[in-house]
Amino acid sequence: MNYETTIDADSALALEPLPTSEKRSTRRKWIIGVGAALALGLAWWLMHDSGASDAVAKPQDQVVTVIVPGKATIVGTITASGTLAARREMPVGVAGEGGQVVQVLVDAGDWVRAGQVLAVIDRSVQTQQIASQSANIAVADADARLAQANLDRALKLVEKGFISKADIDRLTATRDAAVARVRVARAGLGELGARAARLNIVAPAAGLVLTRAVEPGQVVGAGSGVLFSLARDGQLEMQARLSEADIGRLAVGNSAEVTPVGTTRVFTGQIWQLSPTIDQQSREGIARIALNYDAALRPGGFASATLRSGTITAPQLPESAIMSDDKGSFVYIVGDDKKAQRRDVKTGEVSASGIAVVQGLSGNERIVLRAGGFLNAGDRVQPVVAQPAASQPAASK
Image 1 (cartoon, rainbow, N blue to C red):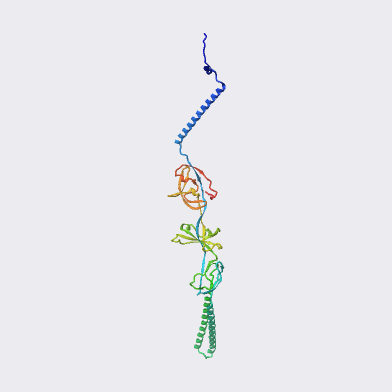
Image 2: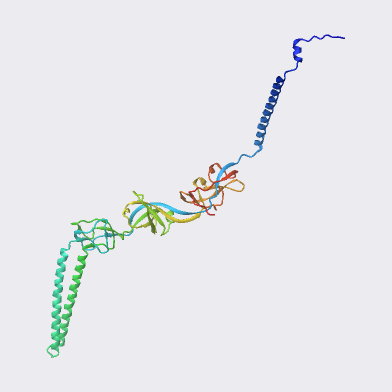
């Protein structure tokens, strides 16, 4: 049986197989679409899974820099200011009755020896007195010789019975009185000579003339005050003013470096005396620093000093590691549990190398170097150990 089937053009085209190139293009598009859908799904899952994990995970630990300082030998220093002066100043004035100055032989800045004449006072009157007394000695000496001669003659006559024993006693007494008058006259001459010698103003010891307050023609006396001021042996000193706490840290023999105002030169000296008392008004004491003579050191000038107050062995930390509050100074220490712990400390010497911790640390702790202001006791941290700065002293455990 024959059937006739009618097929239109569109149906014929639909039933007709696709070309090979079009098949490949369609497959590629399908694969790309599936891949994109899988990527979007994975991203969505990761986003939601991460959020869920954060909801149950612990907060991230703060990273902090820590340092193990060890212990170092620290030289204590104290800075002070004060004035320069003669270590032993000798004021020189009129020792005798005074008079008019006729000659001044030295000036400020001169070196003199012990007993050297500094100035001469007119002695014309004293010269005449000495001459008169010398004549009195001659008269007394002549009287003594005459009395002795009379006694000698009488002793020869007494043997013959011409002179009595009483006459001999009288002549002996006359001779003794004449000899005594000679001694009195000579003592008087010595006194006048000593008085005249005191008209010379002399140096009591060797040293450097600091000031001169007398000129030729000036009339001076016992009330004229200081005419010359000398530094014994040229020794100088700095009188450093210190607080009660600082002076208690020093000892005689400690070294010091002195820098006078107006110069960059540094002079090395030693403390030779510490004030036994404290000024009630300023609450300060004086450390006297012995210095050798130098023309750049001028008594009366101002100077600054750096004094060595001994050494201590202690941990030394940068300023950033030490904090303070109303309870005092403290640091944060990171323990084995990686938690920040507060440790109260007592600080000491402050220098360019850091701050010495004299109490509270052994030096083996891990101390938060920076960012301590953002920590609280008990916070978990991630410590990162920093190497000590090259400028810090080598730590010794």
